[in-house]
Amino acid sequence: MQTSRATVDRLLDPENDSATLITLEKAALVLGKRLRVALVGQMKEPLQTQMIPTRIESTLAQYDITVSSITRMDTLWNTMLRLRSDDGKEYALRLYNSAIRDIKLIRQEIAFIRHVASFADIQVPVSIPTREGDEIATVYVDEDPTFACMFEWIEGEDLRGRASVETARLIGRATACLHRAARTYPFPVSGDGMRESYRWDEGLVSEHHAWIDQRDAVIGPERSTLLHKIVDQVAAQLTAIPKTRDTYGMIHADLHQGNFIEHDGVVAVIDFDQLGRGHFAYDLANVRTELKSEPVDTDALWHAVKTGYSEILPLPLQSDADLEPFLLAGELGFLDWYYNSPNPEVREQLSARFEHTWTVLLSML
Image (tube, one colour):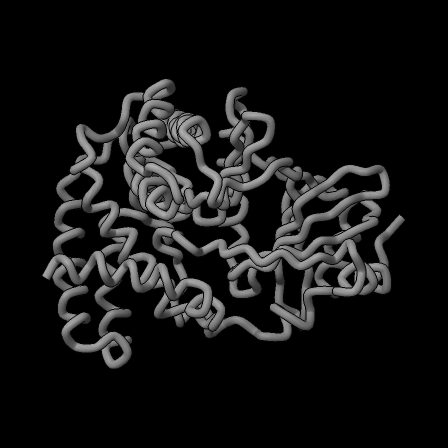
């Protein structure tokens, strides 16, 4: 039985208990979100807001699932929905932002997730094929293609604000499991076409010069000069680091606490839409930055992360000092996201993170 537009509208009605809105500060400590003004300029507002019910209806028509409830989880880029079917099963439906035009990028993300899922000791959300067997549902709105994917629902709660030494150890293990999978995946090289626009190494860092110049009036001359110096410093440091299969490959690149889901002592990893090539230490720097926001002994948590990681793989760094360029790359990536996002909620939600970032960077003067 197909889920009708009337049913979708009813299930999305805020007065309906099943349509509970959940605000997720997904980008709270994200490292290097790849949003550029040029890309966002292609986005048609009706496709991203008013047309969402139409997209949901047309997407669900491609699956053999009758939906009884929809919970919309407001994120800052894609639209995420939690679905419950008539038989009680739950799913996650991701409506990709309408600015995303390259379906190959999505297929590559899904292929890597399936590779990770082939290892028994890590849980990730595997995609569910449409009725026709495609892992991506395509919906045309005003003749423009938009994309969606259905994923298995990962039961549990994210770890924001509730990390412990034990969960930190499990985070370390989960991160190492991702990198172990990456070590057995084709090694990324220039020209291979594997999500090459998602680079989390010196390639991305060097690109920051352009937006810093564009935002000079907002940033201010003194801070702009400082940012340019930091970009040159970090790019040089990252360029000097060897890229080997043991330390470099496809990385998650968005390992904030909201993307670790804990249930009955098991930690799963979700949300691979920033998947790209980079040093494994970049992911660990992301985790390290996240831990600093926890209301407990962050040094103990970080030690637990390294302990958990080492249970699966050797750490991809000799000492914590090796993380410095990756931590700074993360701060630059955050400012890129903050200054260039078209969504005003980013600046409203992330003001505290913004002030912290500038405190860190200004201390380098």
